[in-house]
Amino acid sequence: MPRPAVLGRAMAITKEKKSELISSFGRGANDTGSPEVQIALLTARINDLTGHFQTHAKDHASRRGLLMMVSKRSSLLKYLRLHNRKSYLEVIGRLGIRK
Image (cartoon, rainbow, N blue to C red; front, side, top):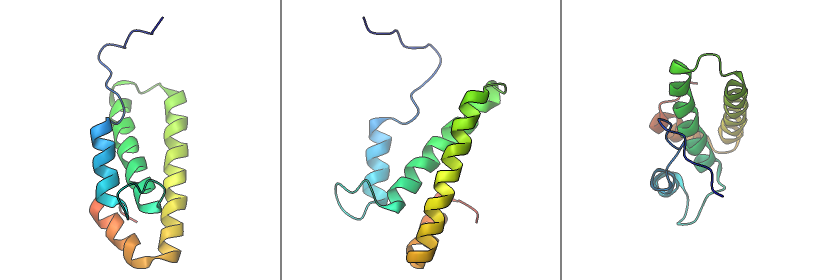
């Protein structure tokens, strides 16, 4: 039996938004593993979760997930900064990440 959808809560990232980010930041048509795409997807999820905490301040389980995502994004940004400086600067500029 399928679980009913929770009212008032949207999905984190829609398929359309995800495919738009992949095509925008990817190196090729089906590129989902490059650091640029992973950073863009993590940024979208982080932005969605920060809005969630405006109404659910005591949701500590989700806050832990948010901190793990921020840490993962930071690691990917560090990798990109060391290996491809031009791409790093482009990604943080397009996503509005201050570093």
